[in-house]
Length: 269
Ligand SMILES: [Zn+2]
Image (spheres, rainbow, N blue to C red):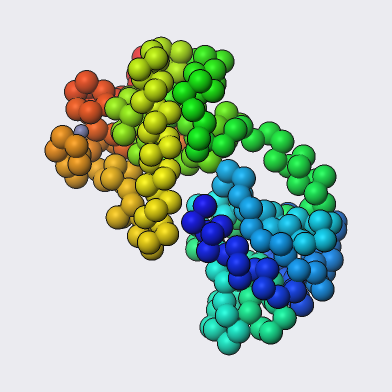
């Protein structure tokens, strides 16, 4: 998301908006203020909060909030550049350039909200602190606050904002921790490794994205079932947990043990 933000920051503020919309009915989540309220205004740039992009107007009166979910893509098209016929959402700027949101697949999950600054603040209030730069001390406090499995904690935007399922896999591998390890069982050294891995993996991801790397090149563990671990060569394993698929190295992370599908083992118990 940070790579997206940097890419869009300059283009979106170059010209005022002449036309806001159309928007797919499932994509636009708000109707007051109306989208047309954006017309004639200029965006100030792009900010990021966890996985949401915020595009405030330069008069400070409105905030366009975009959540791409998994399949949404936000693109800036220069004047005359070909774009999708029916984007999920579109902004047109003076001079003909456009910002378009597209979403692969039939299910529309990405969302666009047009909010006042107060509404935006309320919308974001439930998010936890940003993952990057969290530091071992705050991480220790978060881990101590409730006992739960690490993979689930890392994905929970209310606890720590900004880590999705793929990066939870990458981070836990870099920290040499089991995805099933319980937050309260971590010792000081493990907390230190986890804090370090959050920063180093998110920084690595950002750098690769900025160089244009795709998922296959960016991830080293996520979606790599059966491929050799880049540290020890053991084939990467996977397990289903809470509607998510976890990828991990049984040698680096779980002391050689294979993790059990929690849903299945619950049925068999
Ligand atoms: Zn390994």
